[in-house]
Length: 387
Image (cartoon, rainbow, N blue to C red; front, side, top):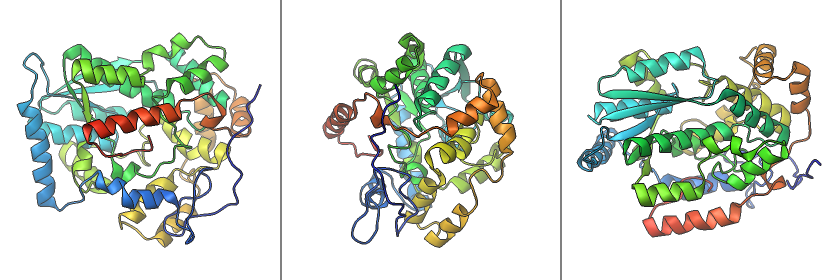
């Protein structure tokens, strides 16, 4: 039985300060028409990062990396684990750690969707002196079944299996090698405005397993790519594992990072944000706009507006061009359909089906929110995400 969507019906509206709109069903606006996303970003999220000048940047990063060098586990062969996808954020994170003299173990999670350019970028990163490399290849038929289950579920979160698999692999590799620190490329500067409705909490295993079971699959298919809150807490308490985000230590500029990578390792651009993955490109530029009316660029552009990188009028001008404008849509849809064992007609039908949201399925949003808030209070950390 198809769930009845719990998403509220909204009159179309766009924020008067940024460009977020009612494609987030739970967006709220104040009396001036300002949305809660940009208000929260300016009032709270910016406190997580340090928007400083170049000298302060070098100082803050230097302090972080020096602390990591001093806290090297005696038996560990590496100082940090860094996930590498061939994208800008993960590549610059690995480069910064390498140039700081850290012993880096680069980890690539291969889910079968990497573009050739992304793989070339990964090779260039891991060829740097002081970086060792390992790869974990997911069981394709199992992973494919999980991805199909999320498409069948009608939620926007069809990238959740990949996102949680990355975290699960990084934790698994860190435990295996006795490494206590994972460096992530996530950052507030580019990802600080992304609604939970668009991409729900990847650690909510009740939600993910409900979707897997609804598709008639054995929930054990999800086990190898799962990182539950309990598993993460156990890793922190028993293994001393922690995840740090160096790109939040300074005023991160993606264009500047891209130029630095090109100059240093001949890194190559693959186009849009996160388009190092063929599936992510399909998801954000084709699937989301068609099925849920979501344009992911609104989140990224809204963050840029709040940071003064461009005006709202400039962002609106960019949004006049459809997200799929530079793609061969028929080719991409046919490629994804073939790889996931759909016909093109079946995949097109899925994208035209009614949209559903995480609230249409069992989930633990309140319980996890309480757990994360308690953890932040105990550790003195600020909230950097929706969860």
